[in-house]
Amino acid sequence: MVESNYDILGIAQGSTEKEIRDAFRRLALQYHSDRGGEGRQFIRIKQAYEDLKIGKKYPDTDVEKLRKSRVYSGDTDEDIRRKNQILGSELSKEMKIAEEWAAALNRANSTATRLFGSKALGEIELERKANGTLSIKGNFMAGSLTYDGPVIMQGSITSPSWTEEFRTDIRLGRGDFKLLEATENKYKIENGARVTVENGNAIIGNVFGRKLRVEDPAGRVGVFEMREHRTHIRAPNGTIVVENAVNTALLEADKIIIINAEDDVRLVAREIEFYGGKLTYDCTIELRRGGSIRFHEGFSIQGLSGDAIIKLENGKKIRLFDLKTKKIRDLGEGFIPEGRHDKNSTMVGNKFIITYEMLDSLAKPSEQDRGSWFSF
Image (cartoon, rainbow, N blue to C red):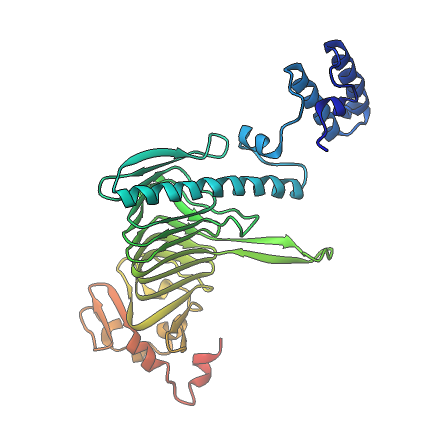
């Protein structure tokens, strides 16, 4: 049975204003922290008194509290998780309605604009334009959205840390996904969100994953485990353009254009172009057959971590260290003076191009070199 505000104050339903006030004062003296009472109970009593003053018989439900405030902290981790579970559930319902609304407009080839969410949950504006593009304004925080057409977004994308159930998952059947002027506006995709563009390109800003240290689920004191929220961007038939990918991210595409990759980033593509100077030791490049890796001017391959791994589609692995040092003589003349090249690697201006075929041939070491190639 739901406890009423009268029950919380210990008085009968229909009590007079004076009886309500006297009950509050009596309990406040008992539970106020200055008198050694429990702070949480005092807050409940005070809220019940305030509610009854305006004729409100029952306290707010969790959903009502959620809609009245965007701050969902609490005294305990359990309280935070419970409230944020409600947040994820409410947002996911809104995004499902948004998905159905956008699909109906697509079928009718109509235009319209509508707000989803609320000021408490966070508002997001969707507009279906005459050319079929879906415009999204606002931060996407939880739930899934599938759309068969291009998407232009003004806002960041995140995903709940507390549950997989309401993970952010945006999918496009066709057309490009673009964060509008992402670098200038500091838009980002983070915290384990997923964006899939089946037949188009993904033009985005910064991508951040997340690793959390959580207490052992079995309750063992002092034991922790790492929980991974890997942000995943996928464009299997197109290009991903990203500024920086940091801390537990996965990019999969036919082609990836990127400035920097650091802290457990996986890049999977047929063509990869680097424009920056950071590729850290715990990153992996997975190169597909017939592809290439291009390091552009402005930095040297020598500045990248030698412990970064290049994996070929046929399963062979090569450390970047081996390309930079011991085996650099085998790379052909493409890495030596400007303008000289061979059939496997080329240097155009200050650009280094390493092909899959060249890496495949280098990954067949002689017996005396076998240990240096595969000792990682």
